[in-house]
Image (cartoon, rainbow, N blue to C red):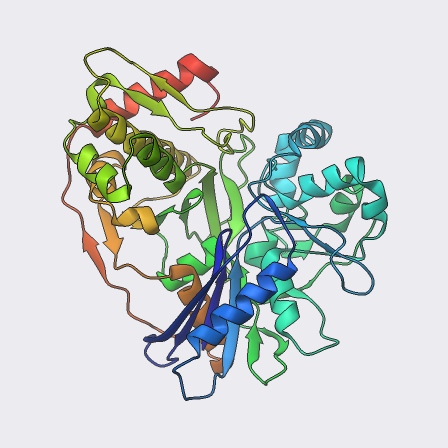
Length: 464
């Protein structure tokens, strides 16, 4: 199998044995920077990453699946050419259109219809922006897709129809998780009355066709759904993912519809649901702080571990790129509690770790509010390997924390989906997942309280 993770920053590809889940080949290719990108760059990166992953693998590849960054708006014309660069999930230019769209329909109705109250990350709000600001381009749009839909489509034989799955579709703002159907009237209203074609919807183990060299193409899914599939997450498991964005999500048997907008009521990649809280600011908070302190991530780790819980009273509200949850797209980061005696590199480093994780711990509290039972927390993503992150997390989440062994879980989940589609079985293959339990640490309640007070002081009671 090949599993592809077409993320914000790069494409990762894994070649995986279908029977065992063992990774036998890996490849990676970077994406252009920015919040809008030519989607054809993803196709180029995918080809390069797959070629690298297949380099030393002699056996033929039977199937492939692509898991991709959610929400991105890809528009193509009648000839299948991109109309304009894709707007990514972290592009917040549609903030004004979002406010008008939510005010017109009401958060309760939108949550009931789509499972979520849209924020500027969502595809539907980007369509509203395009209709308002680039009407000539909007008039040329024949099809609307998500990033994973586009990459899968470009892998397929000529003449194939774009396809998607309910997991990624549930992040558009014009799909019903409850009925499993598109909501074209909602899309058309946002897009100024235009009615572009949408990908056909596939079941969890269905295929959209074959590649030009004969590989079966599975439905694919969103990145968070792919990670949940790789981790074999089930009811009681909460995944905290520390990547470019931070996400907290759980697999449930029943969908959610949170009118406050804090919890997005997504679907997963297995036919169940994936209530999720997303923050814009995660691992990059650490890299930015490390650069400020003139060190690297290993140096930041060492500094943070030398500070006491609570960072000597320093609190970082880390809205460095604005924020999605709470919905503050124009916010900036704030450091509070500064005194001459506590303004040290060690406390700064720890405040960055604590601030990043406090936003995600608050996200877990929101999942609990909508009924999620947290039996354990699975901590994944590049920043999950940090010893300081692990030490802080084990005291913040009010549940046992486990750290699965390092892996490209989004790509691995895509590979598992590909194996499932190829097998035709009722359930995906049972690949092993190894995780290490973290010892609990103290001080978490005090850190959370200080963070909550800082957010309220700066932004008012905007959430949680």
